[in-house]
Image (cartoon, rainbow over all chains, first blue to last red; front, top):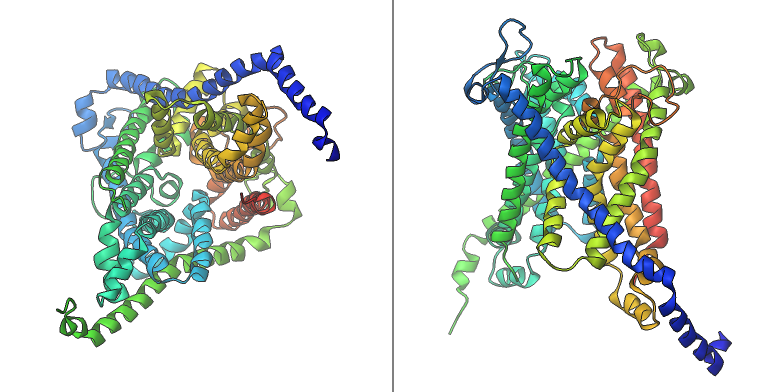
Amino acid sequence: MKNINQGSEKFKIREMIEINKTNTRSQYLEKLIPILLLSTAIVSVLTTLGIIFTLLKETIIFFERVSIIEFITAKEWLPFVPSDPSYGILPLISGTLLVTFIAMIVAVPLGLAAAIYMSEYATDKTRRLLKPILEVLAGVPTIVYGFFALTFVTPILKKILPELSIFNALSPGIVIGIMIIPAIASLSEDAMSSVPNSIREGALALGCTKLEVAIKVVLPAALSGIIASFVLAFSRAIGETMIVSVAGGATPVLSLDATQSIQTMTAYIVQVSSGDAGYGTTIYYSIYAVGMTLFLFTLLMNLISQWISKRFREEY
Amino acid sequence: MRILNNEQITNGIGRRLLTNKFTKVILFIATLFSLVVLAVLMYRIMNQGLPKLNLDFLTKFASRRPANAGISGALVGSIWLMIVVVPFSMVIGVGTAIYLEEYAKKNWFTSFIQVNIQNLAGVPSIVFGLLGLTIFVRAMDLDRSILAAGLTMSLLVMPVIVVSAQEALKAVPRQLGEASYGLGATKWQTIKNIILPAAIPGILTGSILAISRAIGETAPLIVVGALAFVNFYPSSIMDSFTVIPIQIYNWTTRPQIEFQEVAAAGIIVLLVFLIIMNSIAIIIRNKFNKRY
């Protein structure tokens, strides 16, 4: 350390800078590195293009064999009937939406309640305890939730509703709801925490109770973030695969009866993939058409969520 | 002049305070609900799985008879998969993050990449499986190998790694970089010697958390074609394989009730795997957490 103060050492640093400037190897690196890094960044763009290209290409082959009108309007999804297969996506969509709506009925009130509690009522200590638990809940693999739905939730529901079949929409719906609670809770809590305290204090000073502050002041101010979190959770529930594959059954039906076996879009893809539908068969291409539908649904939801949080954000 | 109307404030104040207290309790119970579910989930799985969990279970291969079923093939398969996922996803993810944070100019292309990554994070995992099936398994002819599955999973976790690495890079104070420039260092020297070392703990923590999600992921691997029944150890990245979650899925969907216990034991192994990964992430975060 002493040497640094000596004049000769100061000169050395200047010298080092000069050497550094003329070092050709490092000059090459300076030009090369940004190109390398840019190419890794382009991988993400290629991934998106790859997804769109893959889905489009195989879906087009599917539509050469099955008319797009039948795909959209037919009310039966019976690809495994060898003599007269029917490819109407509606039963898969209704199964998916049924499960998703059940999930939202569970997750929206519980997630929002947790968010309000954590942002408005909980002390710092409680919040620091609760947040990691929610993170753990979000980190549990979905196959574990599937196991839970089939071996625990379904038997319990069967005691309450004897007409429930072993595979049904209700049990995976509830479990998916539990799975997406953390997403709603933490995103909504973030939105509510970003409402400045001065607004809360103003309302409290005017004689509001904490509840009135939460419902009438904080909630409206954070509404865009909260709704964005709902839409995001909705999109995640639509794309959820293993829980419905394990506990939802494999019966594509166009009905809103939650006690009976259904099939979602994701579960159909899993069913075909884990069986042995040969490469090149119409069934093989049908999973891409279903995947395309699923992709469009979730993309739409994600775009809506981003638009809401941008368009209606209140800046303080 | 009175701004506040006392009558309005005290109007039904007792009832309003009571509602407030009551709602607080309700909200607290709703928050506890998640905790209770987590506890029940863990209790059920421990209860069913622990009796089955012994050295035999860890060292035996899958079997048609529940008494003989073991998880060793899947355990080794999961580790093989990580050998592919860790380098690929980290290089691509961290590289993208450095580019976006340090090099990219503020133009439409940069914001396009950024929005694109956000949207990729929202694509259902099974769609990545379809991508992997067409591109890696069929077009690149990697067949149903560990490499094909690993590349698919790398693309799946890449957006999460990018976002967390960007956060870590953003958290490094600008002065550090400026001091380095002031001493005559070039841009890459500054990034390599100053900014990256300061951001590494955050990058590692985020990456480990993202990769541990890949360990628990099932759906894309079913599509890419991991096997359901494996009685050998893979010996290279071109071998076919299975992983722990797929083995659990296979056991869960069997009709025999005894397989449920086997599945629960498999879940315990999976959760232990995940807990180890997460603990490493937490240790790194606490050990290297510097405040500037």
